[in-house]
Image 1 (cartoon, rainbow, N blue to C red):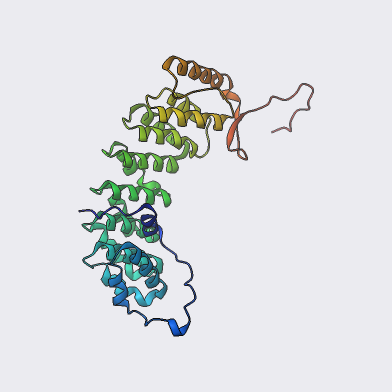
Image 2: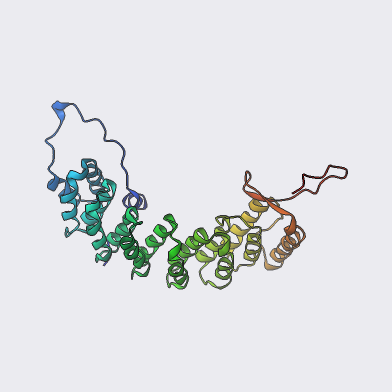
Length: 310
């Protein structure tokens, strides 16, 4: 069972809300309505997600005093109340909330499970919490698996690398995409061969394009990413070829013409130009951190004094 898909902006607010701005100044006393009780606020969360977001914020601003009622609300029959209660409890950061949020990792609603995964990141350093969150990398729903991957990446959890690597074979392209990006962030330049393999073997253009884009996140930067990008110029999908050409120009500072929409023979001619240029200069490429690109190192001019001894 799965909740109706929430608008992207609202879902982002649900999943990332961990701190709220200071409350606005109250209106003049003559116009101030009677304050709602905590149970009334919780019931108002059930109306719709806009009420849910506002009420979750107000309950979080109440601090620890609201925690008992919010913990009870994690058992509410409406999924909307459960996930907005998680957001409020996470914002408060009270340890009493951990068992209740952890229990919701097995909620029948996938959105509730995803929200629980993300917000348990607040307590991710606790081994018992981390173990249960990482188990959600095997959740039956791709949406939950995706958010578990995002949390692994956000918390730089290298112990999860074997599990993340197994998701490169997931049936859902969106999960393979997130797994590939997570590996690129966690492993850095060591993920280069993984990117090459995905580019060569994955059937989804979305995932192959991810392999191309991930060349920009590898740390430390390596000029061998150019090998992946040049290979991608031969991809069967136009969008993958176009992204690769753009990143090559940006990453190497060269403007070898390549039209991703051109006929095969014309494209191949440009690819060979890129291959020849890279082969001629790969031993001279150095990383320019200020410009965030590789440049050909300049040999010393004739007659210039030698550099200092090493």
